[in-house]
Image (tube, rainbow, N blue to C red; front, side, top):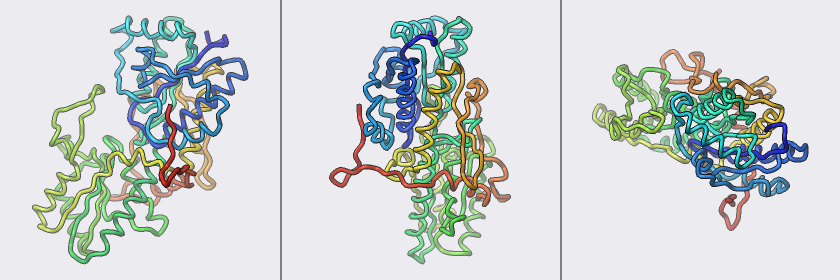
Length: 412
């Protein structure tokens, strides 16, 4: 089928980011180029990921092939314009009828290329579909396109969406630190940042240290076991330097017994992929600090703005997101199936990257952790090496368009 002038489909899955629509714009641009080369006739967008494919709920994206202004607006729009889902596919060997039906839908619409923009769980979807198609001799090309603010996809130097989230966190935490510093009354401020298994986002709170800007007094990542008594000891030492202490913590920090600090309010609840729902890490620590020290304590959960604050997006992130989407189409029409397009860093100074397709089966369901050399020996802060790695990813200010004083966004 891929040798014919056929159609393509693209979907977005998992948690949205400030750059996921930039990747979608990149796929549209790549498909427009493939259209002129006689490879792709129409590009469909499936509404709400794989759920939209199963219900045949499509948007014709071909009408935007020559709409540069619309694609630019799309690139600067937060959330997932096509809608998203969290749908765990069964294994092909346990439910072949499911995959037969899905392949049948693709054939019905003459779809020869399937692009899925998402994170770890989405790459699992691409891996299963491509494996089934290969086993059945189907010529449909399946290509994963990375997206996750968590920055935990292996095979990537970093992932689209992370840079913008990191920029928001670095800026917001610095503003919080400056706000807290105006008083002389002893106080602790705990900033809870997203990150279940990998602490990349929380690490971003310390980027300012290599720019001469304020950084949190303490930073705790899921890569290290969290000990409450050590936390109290760390706070006591921080109080000796100044009265207003700021600590950044990942939502996924765990005690030695494996339990999440923030499990409490939703203990035992899990999503369809088996991930525990986390809530209240900052609040749990707030209550513990108040009881132990008796001082003023507040917890701040950055929550959804980490992934949807497009007004503070990284230009580097948006440019790379468009590039990786377009490169994914190039690789697909060249015959690459069962791959995910990745970002490879060529150098830091000057900063240069390349887009490289890698076997999705070696990436799906794996986690890229913050390496040991990026975490200080005390386990409560980051190294300069980590901050220098992160700094290029937050560079550049995106040219968000405004109307009547408010950002102007794209919608289908």
